[in-house]
Amino acid sequence: MAKLINIKHYEEYHKGLRYANLLLEEFSDKIEELTVNLATSKKWKEWSDNHIEGENFTFSYEMLANTGDPNVDLLFTLLEHINDVQEKIEKPNESLIEKLPVENSRTKVSDAISFEAHPFSPFNIENADRLFLGSFPVKAMIQNDNSENWYYGSNRNHFWVILQAIYDTSLITKDEKESFLIANKFGIADIIGGCTRRGNSNLDNDLQDIKINKYVFDKILKSNVKEIICTSAFVKKLLEKELLENSKNNGNKFIISVMPSPSPSANRAIGRDKEYKLFKTENPDKATLDYKILLTKKILMK
Image (tube, rainbow, N blue to C red; front, side, top):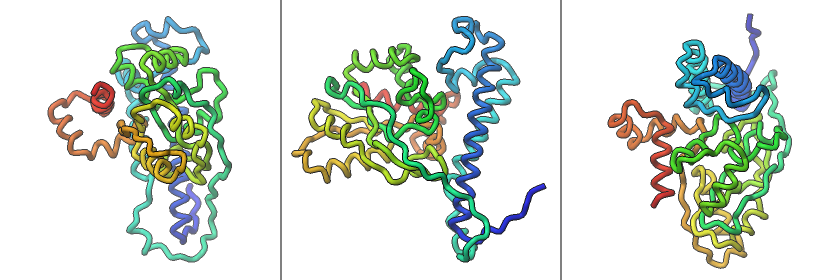
């Protein structure tokens, strides 16, 4: 039985939605871990025989979608539905503003406010021609002290999966990723050095009290980087603002590109894109990830 609560203020309504999204994210992470374990327990395509119990590894959504196990398929479908719900309630309906009175609510859904510092050092900027520039790690990466924990380390993020597909190489371990970046003269870094979050959200739009990573920015200005590849439009906006305002820039001219966001939370926005709809019409069997790979390849191979 649900307990009726009194939420009159629009801000409390907004916070309630964010709290619901946080609970969904925690539930999704647990279901995802269980689904991976179920998929590998049946030695899917004998793939799991190559790994010892308790070992950390990358298991992508594409693998989960192709196990052939009907039970895993159902759980994978549940994960997709959860992700879809999260994307739909990321922002409250603005039409409700006038419907909700502005008196103080008797119910509080508090946001956890704690400043987080970036856990990773920038990599290979000084030897790079091109730089992958992101925003800030997800909460799980901040809290995880695993030695393999690094940029875009979440199993739900497709960054390394996209590069694997384009360059036809294994990018599972941190060593493989570092070797790949060095060999191809890529650097990698995040533009935010520290921030707080609304409701522990991993969304760029929910990052607050943002502190630009000045150390990274100074390294960029002193480097021979010719192109900065931002992993979202949000990152591009922060970068251009910093370039405009920073007195040390001295007129540096960078090619600034934006690759499709590797985060699954961007899939809904991509689904509304006219070019994506045309892509799906011509390639009905292809997924959103295939479209991201195609667009990213155009940037990297030009």
